[in-house]
Every structure is written in structure tokens, then in C-alpha cells.
Amino acid sequence: MKRHVEIPDDVEVVVDSGILKAKCGDKEVVNNLTHPLIDLTKEGKKILIEPKKENAKLASITKTFESKIKNAITGVREGFEYKLKVVYKHFPMEVNVNGDRLVVSNFLGEKKDREAKILDSVDVKVEDEDVIVSGPDKEKVGQTAANIERNMQSPNEKDRRVFEDGLYIVQKPSKEEN
Image (tube, rainbow, N blue to C red; front, side, top):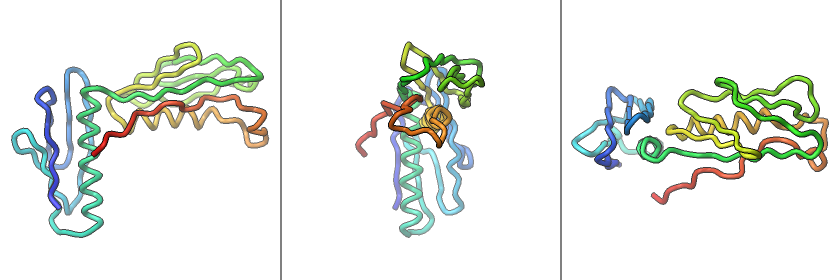
């Protein structure tokens, strides 16, 4: 099941032994799309994804490669954005970006700051009660938002119906119709 992805004029794509690099302006996304039974080649303004034999598993991997290529192209052109909301009832939290870490002070009155790792090429901004996570690589942006949400959960012994404090994902990038 051969598939292809069209490359827009303003995006530069390089395919070298399964490594795909998409670039537009100063944004760049690099994806490792290697599989022993799938060939990835660039012909003109198209990227061809060809499995060496036909079966359901390879068809699934081919579609995944196609989605990753489309996400890379969309990412370098438009970017992806997640929004998180800072919620607290009991103790006012202070949220700051410090290098490659998001630091939350006074979470549930804790003395020690909580931190979440920000992956490379991801930009995090704190605006009042909102935390905006953006960047060209959909996987890294989503993983950073998940790191933030996961690290700011209440400890297990707290009742979540009472202690609702935390940072919660409230908006994700919409899925495109394929």
C-alpha cells in the first residue's frame, strides 16, 4: 500500500536513510522514520512511503509514517500549541519558567518546589492563570504538556474532589481530517 505526502513550496524537506528533516524559516523538525521493510524517498515535491510487502502491520506503520510527515510539515509552518490552566483552591501557586524547567512554588503549601522538564525546541509561557506550551514538534510539545500536568498532581492520600489544585490541560491541537 504505497502512500505519498505532498510538500508545500515554502517547506524544505530532506530524507536521508530514514531520517526526515523538515524546515521552514527558523523552525525545524527531525523525525527518525526507519523500518527495515519500508522505503522512504523524496521525488520532486512528494515524499513516497513504500512497504516492501503487503500486510496489515506494514500498512499501519505506513500510515503512521504518513501522519508523522504531515505533522512535521504542519509543525514547521504553523506550530502546535497546548494550553494548561493553573487551578488552586487552598494555596496560591506561583508558576515560573526557569531554563529548561517549569517551576511551581507553594503547591498545596509544600516547602519544596515542583519541577517539570521542558523538552528542547519547546517554548513555555506563563500568562496569569494560563500556561502555553508551543513548538514545531507535536510529540515534544505534547510530552512537555503531559510532564507538566503529571508532575503537578495531588499526592495519592489527598481526596481529588476536595484538593483540585494542579495544572490541567484544557486545550490541545485539533486533529486534521485525513
